[in-house]
Length: 325
Length: 287
Image (cartoon, rainbow over all chains, first blue to last red; front, side, top):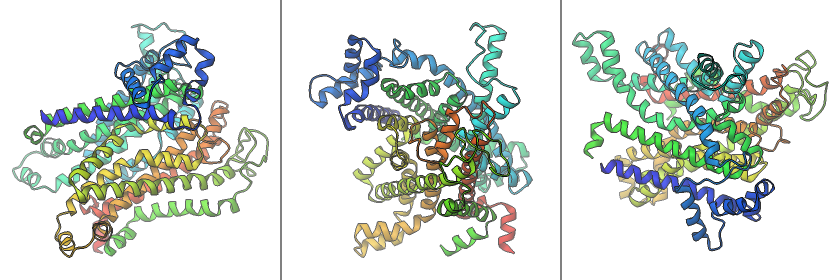
């Protein structure tokens, strides 16, 4: 229990640090922070909304601690202000529209990459030094070095612009009405296929290498030799003994890599004009929509903290030593 | 230590990787001498396909893509190397200090490290870059270094903690060596492989991240680098009009340079951790 409490305390600290960051940044830039942050907003929003927006970001009369208290209060009540680019929507509304699409990409691609990467890693480790391993492991490493930016540009050009197999952008064909119809769901899947493919390519090498290396380390352990000596079948030793334990490092690193996956999803969405968080953010950046840019940092941080918390719970379930501490 | 480098040199993956990296370093140093044209020189019509005159074609602005990529190598590598150096320096300093001193200092540094690790990098960098405006390559290097040192610090701290109770450290403490000397002269040499690993990974990360930030339009579009080339290609819809060559050359450079660094890292891992060495390598080491 104390383990979870300590972790929860840490997550609150991390969240507040992200908020401090958002709060300080406009105030540290040369010039008047209000002018910097709301130069675009002033041309779009009516005066009373602009006043409310300033208050949300802590621009009230008083010293910095008072201002920061104001900002923290709005962050913890999830009041992230108004979007400038998507006026009159609030930042919350804009982010919530985009979030499901990003989650679709991130979760599906992570699952596929995890299953495929781990399976291939097990195979490579089991026959280490064999044909598959000698080719597969360096190949996985090369693929891992390819940035998502390059993968998505190549996939976009080859598969959708040249071969015209898959659509070049958006989440569904515009002539369809959203709903639970076969045509609509098919269209959503066809549009998501390329971004997901790109993200799978970006992640699969990492899972393969992690699994391979931690499994090779385990295969030298005495209990593996014992299991083989007992006459257990190859499959039993491979999956129930070696892979079962080799999976632990993958689980703990999963939460860490999620941040990179979200980052990769941002890039992929921009290349494919896919209406998730990344594409929305891109539009926000080009319009210098600071409330939106800051809001997505809070949301992404929250997503990372949630994922880490889930990983903590999973570790607690897998590793009895943590429960006793 | 000497054995470590000897077996690294004998490793085929390491030598291929080192060759690729050396090629790009040479390109960064002497590229402007061998480039077929100046970085912003108009040499042909817009979007000319690759030909004998322009091996990788021309951009929307009629500039030679290959020449621009060669000129951009210097900026991209400079950002990558300097950011990688800063990431490694911060990560090593924090990790060694926290791991050796322990107690309050360790708790404080570890908390900061974990916060840096858990706040997602790219969204954070986007906020920073958006406020700074058209960020120069030097600013981008600073932003990358400030947000990405957490991983190195965590790994270095763990390794330092495992070295901390070795006899030779206790001996140095009993001899009355000052703390800085224990850190710099006793601990650091034994962390070389981890520091090297951290450095190579960080350079790779920094080169890719710089290209990404510039692709998103957060860099200085007038500076020629691999990222701004991709940004210009995106804003002129090069792919949509079929001018794939404008994207291909910088992409190829990114992929090739990245593979070179990964090969070195992979080989270092194999040398440092003998169990990972594959059968063939063992045979060759024996022979």
